[in-house]
Image (cartoon, rainbow, N blue to C red; front, side):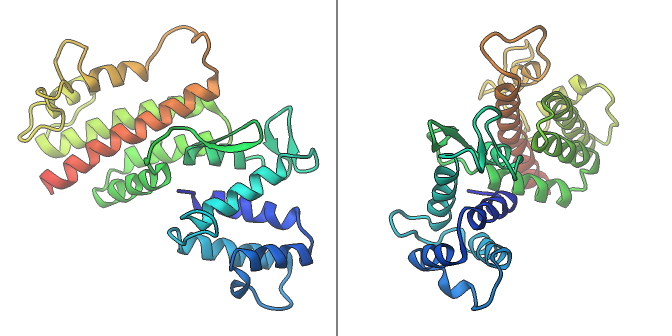
Amino acid sequence: MFSRATIMDAMSLLKDINTHSTLDVLLFRYGLNEVIIDGMSKNDKAVSVAKYLFAHPEQPGIIGNNLTYELVEHVIETSVQGSLHFDDNSGEFVNYPQLRRLLLKDGFVIEEGKLTRTFQTDIDFYSNETLIDILLIRHNLSIAKGHYDQATNAFNRGDWAACNSQLRSYTEALMCQVAEKLTDIHYTDSHLARIALSQTSPPIFYTELNEWLNNGTGYFEAFWKRLHPHGSHPGLSSEEDAVFRLNLVQISSLEILRRYDRNFT
């Protein structure tokens, strides 16, 4: 649900908005008092709790079925109520400027002071990102992985143009590298690589599922076009566009990697 970085920033923010005493009371309320020991600094308490939450992602909460979500929600919604820890103008946390973007990557936004899911879905964006990394490393797709890492790093620092550029490069490199592994042909033209991926047995892109129609209207044909738009995008901010592209690329490229991993290795 939440990445390691999100949890760590949120727990660091938690210790900032509490005294030792109120922090201890809150951790006791959430059943986390045994994670800390007497005499710990607030920093050490934050790290210990973050480590525990990251290691126990399915731990039930005191109200719902997920402790990490409840605690992160509490931290976010408490912090945005004042200007000491949250800047309304920039929409960022004062001491943790990456936290809002990390939440975006995890599939959450802050709307009217509430932590809200970007989509009403069970998609776990953090798990998808982790699985993409695993499969890229497993199959030695180093060029594609390099572009993917640069894209996520650019997203984390809010460089939307660089993120979009690296997402295109990642997608192109992934298709070319997978096609090369399947055909023993080195591809410099990604269009030819995509055609090759529709002709493997079994195919990576399925005609019967309208994924590749060879006329520009199949899913993966349209997906590639969406990564190369021209002109401005009325009503869509650069940040919103980057979030959309990142989610689209994660879901689509993960399916390519899964099919390759399942059918050809």
